[in-house]
Image 1 (cartoon, rainbow, N blue to C red):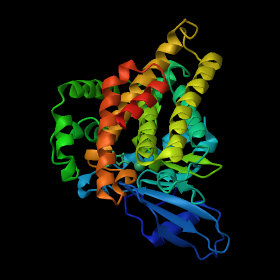
Image 2 (cartoon, rainbow, N blue to C red; image 1 turned 45 degrees about the vertical axis):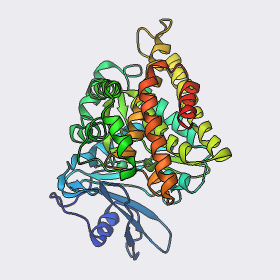
Image 3 (tube, rainbow, N blue to C red; image 1 turned 180 degrees about the vertical axis):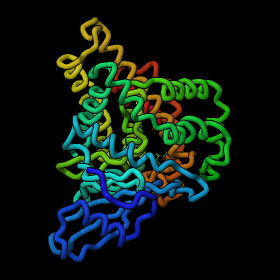
Image 4 (cartoon, rainbow, N blue to C red; image 1 turned 135 degrees about the horizontal axis):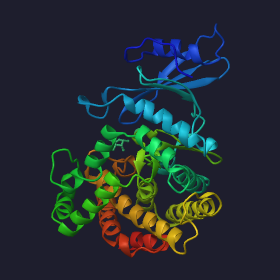
Length: 396
Ligand code: SR1
Ligand code: MG
């Protein structure tokens, strides 16, 4: 559904958000709706509109013409709202139970009206508070396999694949990733943000020529390999979860890129938890890492076997080659994510919220070391166990 609303961009207020919600949702016309701005991300406003009498709720997400994390000095395209809504709809064709329903959109207002998920919790918050989310690995493994297979050349006619790749061209948001994940943290730049105790560790990264070459190769993959329609920012803050349910939100960074990028980002954000947790609680996360990959690989294999349109699908060794490359790339991309979330511009609460300074710095150094090792050793990884081994070694 496309909204019938004013055609020039205007930031929503609580009042205009309520008025808008009434036009698209089946609220009682006499209802006294309430509205709360609940966005806690880096870029957008999120309004939750509720009928307090019935408990019925809807979300209106609005992109701002600049990055909220920085302010108006960093202009940012409003087109990202349309990209996000269209990725949700496209991915929803394959995993309807794992993404929110989109009710309406407006391109001019950069708005998406969608399903309220406030009965769930942002996975990052829950994980930090010790929750384990028993469905998380299974659901995200499936989400990755289904969305990535079905939007790739393995699952689509090449005309449709190229049409989608053009539709989901997302240069401005990709540039943020190119800078914040693949460039800035690997040079001594003012945009980086880290505590003085990490100065030597940061300098070791900037002076590591071998590491820089490997990051350059990973950046090249991100820039050039239009393999599947990615979520593009699949961290644990982009996932709502409970004991029974998982929903992936926020694909505004969606574009056609290398499959290993979505896999690697998710694994990296689990790895932050494997760094900060101890004993049994840590093993739960190690299991999540292993299971995510296993579910992804087995579902992808099943789709390849039953639905691939690729002429070489039965060629011995080709599927194994594709999966090996995804794993290798995922290790490298995870390494970049670990480093950028530790010394780059946008951090993660998993590390920053640790109050004890000694532990916080110790964990951050471990994140940097794990990132370095994943990038440099990624070509040696033949299975997810090899990645777990790298994590283990970085703890010592
Ligand atoms: C300026 S945006 C900073 C980060 O927030 C988003 O969630 C992406 O991860 C981006 O890199
Ligand atoms: Mg986001």
